[in-house]
Every structure is written in structure tokens, then in C-alpha cells.
View 1 (tube, rainbow, N blue to C red):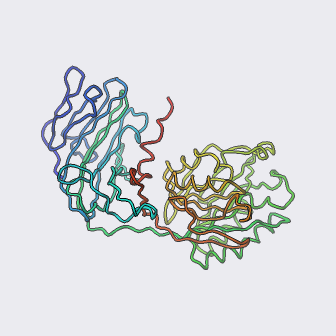
View 2: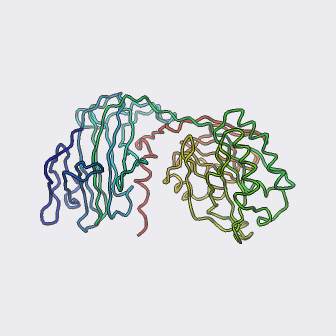
View 3: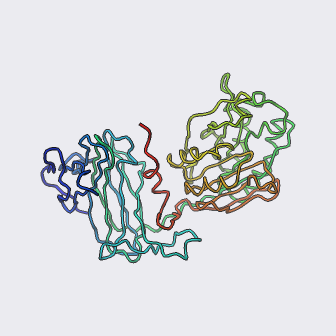
Length: 443
């Protein structure tokens, strides 16, 4: 895509920008004239010296507009989109400065979405394509970030409509540089992971005995080539008769060392629910251990039911997400499942898989947490199947169970593709919309 190289152009008059001006094929636009922001173009200053397209507020609330360009595409082919973004003074980059791509026919209408990655129960419907939302990548150049994505263009599309947006910020600014939409020779990406849920409740009578009871189950998961194995909640406390404080241990400590040896032996990731002692505080935690046997990270349970806070536990406050060899993993614990904020915070931080040690929960909420975030959820519960209160299972982007433990002492495994996009009628790739469509942060 050719970009402009002439001298700086400022499109403004008495503080109000003139939408409709064009710079090298990019046209400034606003949904309504009275909420038009200020548009400018500058010939230099991009991440490696390129030109910049700027949009900024003039102090008024609710301004919205975009730089827009149409580009010819070939239906059925793969394309890569990329642009660099720099922001100044925005409340939320995800809400205020983002990109959309639309696939159009010759008359400028959105085309039917012929792509195969539509949820099974929607395949009988003729969905119309909806805007794509390319995602922020890990590529940085000083204060610039790349936004990029690969797409298979719907068969009927002949044009792509690209919008570089600014929205709702009164005084902030977004700068766009080096936009590109180019045909790609890359094949459809695939990122497989084998996720395992253990359905087992330790029998005690000691923390050490409870740990030992998981050895055969982890070996079974390893024999089935599991990448990630999720164990139960507070597993060194169950059926021991100990208090939370007496069952707690430092992290690193005896349990992480024990499970670290197993993770290293079998070259897999383990999530174990434990009780952590940190000085005078005790936390309900999930620990992620890597295939090198080391602790990759921990999550301290944020929501505490009556029995836990009354028992002297302290809540955590953070929602960490960790990089693994197959993708990004977040964790939550039991009661967290009753609150949509926990899984949503993990999703906004990039989680593709959420590991969930859970004593018991409403399985309809497990379905909701997976579906509303389009994440794979791996739960390990102490509830018997007959109770219908919780399942040890792998849950899909649509909230369906891909695999489920039916008997105590079993391991359920499902292979998933983390590159799979689940498209919904009228929403398309809903997960791509989540960062941009969630409620605005409080002021």
C-alpha cells in the first residue's frame, strides 16, 4: 500500500476539523459532522521515519472519526494487515484508538462470510461478514506498537475497507504509520495444544499423601501427550483435617518442588491448587509450573466465599497471564467462576486458556465464562458427576464440553487449536471485539 510523502498537511479550521479531506487515498471521515475530531498528516516521525496520520480531540466530549481507505483484494486469498500506532493522553487505547477491516463487494456492501470457522450450530445460517479487529502485537519500537493480523478473505469480497479509528477521547491523540494490507503466501496458521483435566479428590490424610495420589494421573496425562494438566483446588488441604493456615506453605516450597519434578520428567505444564503462606498472610493460589520444573507464575484467588475469609484467608488483587510454548494461560479458582469480572480480566490480558481448579460451581457459569470470552476453560473439580454442580472438563469457545471426566481418578484430554476463530451470527469474531466493546473504564 503506497503512503503519502509530501509536506505536512493540517486539516482544520477554527479548531474544527474538516472531514472528507483526502491524503494519498486516505479520507478523513466522521459518523456525524458535529462530532468530527481534528485530522492531520505529517510527512515524517513514524517508527522508522515514515509519515503519520493523526487524529486528535479538541476538548469536546464524544468525538469520533477515522482515516479510511478502500483497497482491492482477491476473495479466498490470505492477506496480512499491519499498522503502527502511537497514542498520547487517551483513557483507553483499546476503546479510543483501534482498527477495523470490512470485506465488501463491488457495490460496497458487506459480503456473505464463506469462511469455515463458524461455530457448528451456526453453519446452517448465512452469516454476513462483520468488521475484523486486528490485535495489538508484542512488537514495539520505542512508544509505537504494531497492530496486525492475518486473514483469509471471504470468497465474494473484492474490496477491503480499512478504518484507522479515534473515538470518544476529548483531548487525546492517536498517530498511525506504515499501514499495509498485502497478500500473504503464509498458509493458515495452526497452534495445537492438548489440554487435560484431572477428575480426582485427594483422600488424605496428609499433604504429602495427597500429592502422591496425583502421580499416576499425571503420568496418564503425559502418556496421552498432554501439554497442560490441571489439578484440583487446595489439594494439600483436602481431607487432611488441617486448617488453612496449617496446610499453607511457602512458594516455592515442598509442593511446587514435588510437582516441578513431575512437570520436568514429563515435559508438560502443571497447574496445582495450593495454600500459600506469605509472612502472616495465607492465600488460596493456583501455581503454574513449566516443563523445566520451575514456577512460571501464581494466581492468588481474588474472590473469597464466607468459609475462606472467615478462615483467615486474604484475597489477591491481580490477574496475571503467562506465556507458554503453546499460548497464553491465565488461572482462576473456584468461587471466581461466579463473577464474570475474573475471566474477563484474564481475557483482556490475552488469556487463550484459563485453568480452573474448582471445588464446586454451577456448570452453567463455566459454560458462560468460556463462551462470553471465547477462551478454552479447563476445570478440575471435587464434585461427583451425579451432583450436576460442577464438571472436570475442557470447555470450548462456545461453552460446550469437549471432554469430561465421568469417573473419579480419570483424565480427560482434548486437543484444541488456539488459532481457531469462532464466529457468531451478527458478531463474527467476538473475541476480537471484546477489548473495544467492553464498558469504558470509570473516571
